Image 1 (cartoon, rainbow, N blue to C red):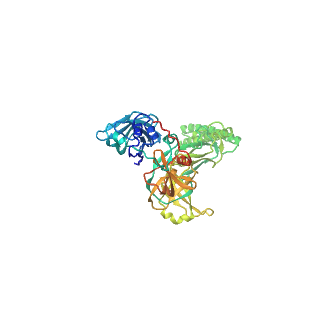
Image 2 (image 1 turned 120 degrees about the vertical axis):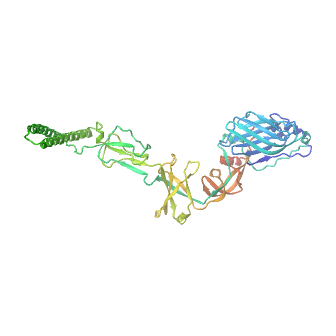
Length: 516
């Protein structure tokens, strides 16, 4: 939890009138204090769920101080638009002051009228839809009217911070995060490409020449298929060229032979019945007749198949088709199958790419080969992704240099890749080449190039920021190691840092936008 505050000092008896303006209550309390030259107390607190930024005049027994309480939801960095805020003064006696809704989005105005002077513990309790939180602000003093008469305000010193109002933060793409300490290793970024895994690419070709059936669903590029799914069916050519008369002659000859065999079988059966021939002769004629029937069927099928091939009509019998099935599961990368089209033997109809896992193939420089035994892991940086992707395992490091680039391939496996990744996509591969050490890190988005110098903007108060130059070190998982005047736990701007930079360049401070 982090604290910033702007305090007032009680000395002398010069400004009793200012005190009555400051603590006389009502909606104009803070503005009255500012007008009299007495700055309000300003507090900023963070928990894991919300940010509290609060301004209030000095607390005086029996007088009303207007608390302007700003609550930001740290999940969305938006103002809270509903909920109850409670100001608690815990002591003897304890008191609570409640407002049931914000007067404006994110801003709760609470009138606090302490009944007795003394030391209290101040806390702010939030009860909003989906967000309950508590901020403890430590001890505060409630002054007696006599003490208040001695209130004297000193001029505020400029602290050099950059003002950026809550109304600006809430309406722009703005977010902060705490600087942290983490284990981070030395790394090397190299160019890489996503490729199919070994055995993860398959071409589906036609085993015979023929025509593609048109009664199966199409499989366009991008279609997901499982192993064994039917992709296409081929109605094969007859195998007899275009010689239809020859096939008609074969049909006629087969039918004539069948007729002769049937007549011979009838004659032999009469002779066997009369005892003139043995039973074996009847069996021989029956076999000859069945063979002739098979020849007729084959000749007729050849003729019908030729007609189907020549006219492009009909689907052919299922028993005559060749079914092409997916040899692997994955996605269709190439689809050249046109229903009804003629194809030659060996024609590629589909290319399938397996997506259960892919390979990330980087180009490792020759100079880095001496450190391959020190590699401790890798991650994938993809343009447009919010965070790097951790890679599963090192598959191999090549042993043959590419002559022109002087690099060797280094291959990592990525299981179940994100659907936004595409095979063939150019990416960056970060390989870690040392043991991890403890370091102060911030998200990479917090670093801004300011005239050639790396800087981060630290939120030192709810509406005040500081520019801190830093030096960058190792990177990992979207975080970068920094050295400079940044302590763990300080909140840095991770979205909207260029806006703070523009505010720092502005010669005019923004007008205070609060209405309390």
